[in-house]
Amino acid sequence: MLPVVSIVGRPNVGKSTFFNRLLGKRKAIVHDEYGVTRDRHYGETFWNGRDFSVIDTGGYLPDDMNVMTVGIREQVHIALEESDVILFVVDVETGINTLDKSVASLLREQDKPVIVVVNKADNEERRLNASEFYELGFEDLYPISSISGMGTGDLLDKVTEYLPSESEPEPEIETPKLAFIGRPNVGKSSLFNALLKDERAIVTNIAGTTRDSLNSHLNYDGRDYILVDTAGLRKRTKVKENIEFYSTVRTEKAIRECDVAILLVDAMQGFDAQDKRVLREAEKFNKGLIIVLNKWDLVPEKDTNTVRDFEEYIYTSVPQLSYVPIITISALNKQRVHKVIDLAQVVIDERKKEISTSDFNDFIDQMLGEKPLPMKRGRQLKITYATQVKSNPPVFKFFMNSPHDLPPNYRKYIENKIRQRFGFIGVPITMVFRQK
Image 1: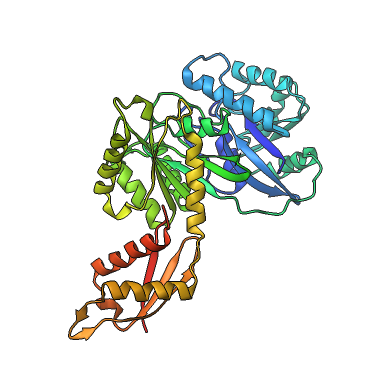
Image 2 (image 1 turned 135 degrees about the vertical axis):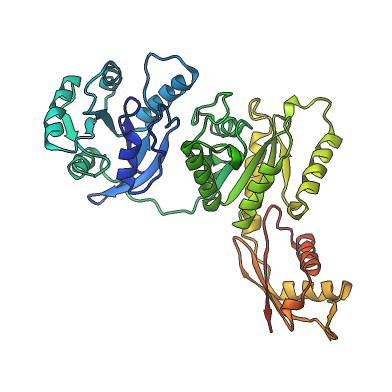
């Protein structure tokens, strides 16, 4: 487990810019609008031979009981509990204000090293003015500029001094990533929290609460997973704010990097064009796919036929994705939520499935016997050899006499027969046809 450094402070002092500076990439949303960083971000960085995790928190607002700021405050408390070193970011332009003093009061209660990071000190005068922040009661104070990087080297030298001594590195195991995706307010954060049994994301009934993606570890049934809770994807025509744009980009990035994309759909709202687009996006990147119908407890007069009706409606909407399994849950009531992980493990195993070349060619011979390839321009199309060339995700290569003449409906027939014979539940299959 890497040591943890958390970044805290009141809103708009440049915490997210500083976080991005430490990680060397644009991971946190940076925007002048108040309250943009609502949830914690995790990242990993390296300095002086030490690897450590960095947490960027929402702005700390101690006296505002607004539902969002209360949630942000809880995020800060959780980050502090997890931290080995705390970086308290302040703004030299505005000087000390009552919110800084409130944050300082909270931090003085922590039995952990606190370093005051005086941001925006990008000239000599501002660096001299930084000394006023000693009034907050902390010994370590470093003036820096997050934008230019000035002063961050000396700061990081001090951070690494405070990090706990290194333990023996654990062997690296590739942990599967499960990304919760879908429209705003369908219950992604509720499912995330129900699985973790911990308030790892702010959960409110305000659409768009989770603007950034969060990563957390889950150990379930002896297996480790990384859960990624993403921002709710809005229809592109509604993505007017820059913030919404960054969130959409980040969600699409989470899809690209995950192993299984779990699409949450509000059972009371139904399956719409946005859901189809997100599913197709995940299929394009050959991710494992699961559809979760959430808020199933609210569906009136439900029975087995109701589930079948939902499945039929979805599969009719996207017939090319009829291999994607569908499960019903209630995240808020924690009904069947762990079935989502059970099903995700099935999909993970299916992605890794390998078919021997001899078994696959026996299957091809049998399939061609049942439905021979068509004639094209007076020639009989023939598949002479086929093999699985890759797993996780699966890729099959076929050698034949005239691959460009193979009609699309026969390609689909081959895929359907592969699924009938070998499964691959929730897994896109790639088929490559080559001249023999």
